[in-house]
Length: 359
Length: 259
Image (cartoon, rainbow over all chains, first blue to last red):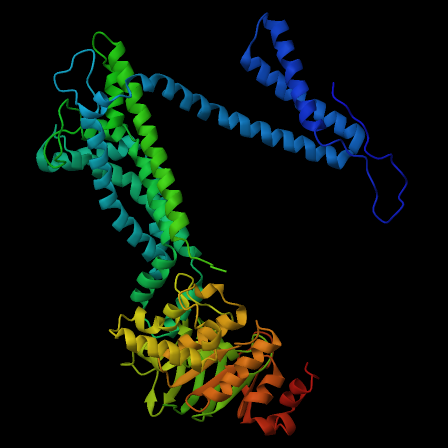
């Protein structure tokens, strides 16, 4: 196992500060790695071959134990607790990272097969088996999401402004409570709501792009309200007072000082809210439906979106199944790229619009 | 420009809590009036009631009269926004708008109200206000830099420039120097003495030397006990307050024998 050379011999205090022995700098990580190696050997012995899951489990336990015990023997209790918690936190982080890395790897691995120009330039009109693409689904997702944003952002932003700047008493509490409830609505319920709403006017069996936008708005509005509310609360009251003291009316203060100051946070929040709804599947299944051709008009007829497209390609691949399943993976990859792009946009917004300190 | 303020029987409440009771005072135009007293005795509350900033806090209200040149500020037909346009305010902590440049901060009163103004007039106004606030020489080469990049004392003078750019009649200052070093404080005190020629100034301060240095009249606020409303105990010319106060409480406070 690893070294545990004491840096300094323990002397009874020469100065007012007690001097403890310390582990050398790389000793803890070395010990941990050694623990993992032993864990791998143990896993190989018990199962008779290399086993990644058991290696991780044995390795994490043995590594943590090795670090803790060594540190306890050399450095004392307080340092040992510190090292133990550091090990636990790092392990938890790595475990949390595993699904993400695995997911990105799998989607890239399977999705890149059909990540070609045909996929982006053709719809599924008349396609059986090989070929075909998701041009119609990508457009559908962009149109439905844009429409959702147009509906949700004004409603959500104004609700947040009301809650922070105007609201008081029972109405404010009631709205806050209802927004919390809305946050927890299962997405299929939002879809059924939009379905029922449009059925009243157009009869059952109606499928429209705008229905999907309404369903997604039910999911997006509370997210926008919540994030905008938090951001608006961060604007210091001193700025509002400074504006009032200049004889500026309340509404102008909100638009030109409060919103202007918090624009970075608002932009980030809205972008992340879009990212949150762009991948919704269930509400779109019952509202926008599925077609094979391109439909650019959300107010007329069915419209395919990427999540629904991926869902149907996977569940009803037809024969032969392989091309359809490959298309589903590529659709998933495109969706992940869209969400990642939105996250990057959110970061850029918060960087470029943040108030400048300019020292 | 400068106007006289008459306050009669003013009671100030936060919801049902009476914070300040029975203030009667006349503030002369073109003078500096200092308000002193221990923390929590209602000086700032009283100051904020003079330009109706008090009611920005939910539940806060006022009973009584504040009359400025014959007009009751709390009259039914008076819009608080118009009141604040006449009576400017400088706060304890410098609060320039972080999203705006120095230039935009100075003309914020104009910009935020969307008043149309020619570019050359705006330039003049910025220069005049910054000169008025003794800041022009320090910032004239970097008017487009953010206002939050200035030092604390400069930021406070920027806030004063912003307040005087809307040409108010009265300037209220709520402990404008409490976050500043002695040199910046001196700069702002000199500035107040200059501004006295054009504005009526009311300043809240914890610094008794400052009150003695700059003000022509001084009011002493005090609490009669915990949970009791604050009162204006004495209001007299500054010389009299600091040499021969009428009230025992004032003398105790000023000489440091308070409590």
